[in-house]
Length: 326
Image 1 (cartoon, rainbow, N blue to C red):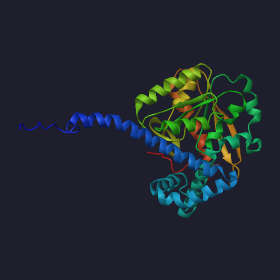
Image 2: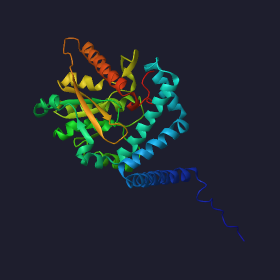
Image 3: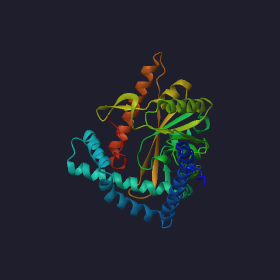
């Protein structure tokens, strides 16, 4: 009897494995994204259940105790940054400020999950600069609003929102599309003009240049744009901050200088340890001479002077664990 030919198993072909991986990998990735989204919604649900002040108090306590242990690298960075800014303070004083800064971030985490509640409560946000802002609110034109990571910094755009200016903002998009869509939805009432996602990793210049073109066109057409400008940017302009040069993103000033937009600096300051805030606005004058580069640098220097003064007044509310100096 002639023996039957032995057929290779279907998975012995290397191309089979390649095709199978191509089919299953996107599905596994999508499953991971969905699980992360479900986990996020569970966490959000837990923190939305109790009263707001109780939830923020618990989160502040947890962050104060756990953050230095769970993320010692960022805690050491916070202490190092505090040493640069306040060399006259003792190590114990700087440690106390670092722990207070973690408490603030713990509160911000819960407040981010409950932005809708905060925005609906008229008593939670006070705008201190009514006289200055009301002078321009009906003739704003294109605007770039620039804030720093103080208090709950996302709320710093609120004066433009309630003025009917429909501001948009630049934010770092999240890789998970379900989480990203949820976070965008949570901010819809704060940024009715939309969010401009800056994808990719830090230093990926193609994405950064693409985003810069989009937001410049947005402001040029009369849009009002919000952004945060107090982080280290290796491609930015070196300007003094607490006595040391800090490379700082200049795109906001560059756009305003080029299209003739106003710049409003804003800070959001927490009242005590509650989820109530006051917001201060200050117009930044941009020189417009024949030397564009000098104009931009001078405006950046003035901006960081204001930010430094604001941080000195409320150091416990600034995000010291961020990278600021090289």
